[in-house]
Image (cartoon, rainbow, N blue to C red):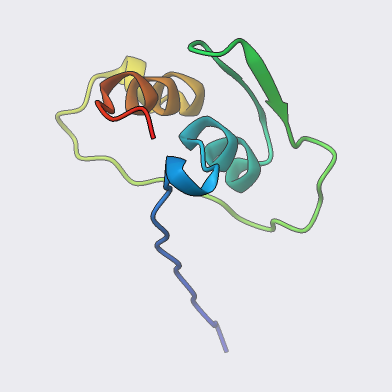
Length: 81
């Protein structure tokens, strides 16, 4: 029997959240935040069995890279808190 689970969370800067950090943790990869030049590396974490982010068909292939997508999210956010 297959069990499916999805979680949606809001990332808030006022509580110290960062889209690049959250993206790197969820995908268990290394992402460099272009705004702050901080590298988030969660490659050594092993508990994530499967991860996939879903994008519409019309999104450019460049945005299918998790690092580019998370940095775009950080750039487009207008509030600094």
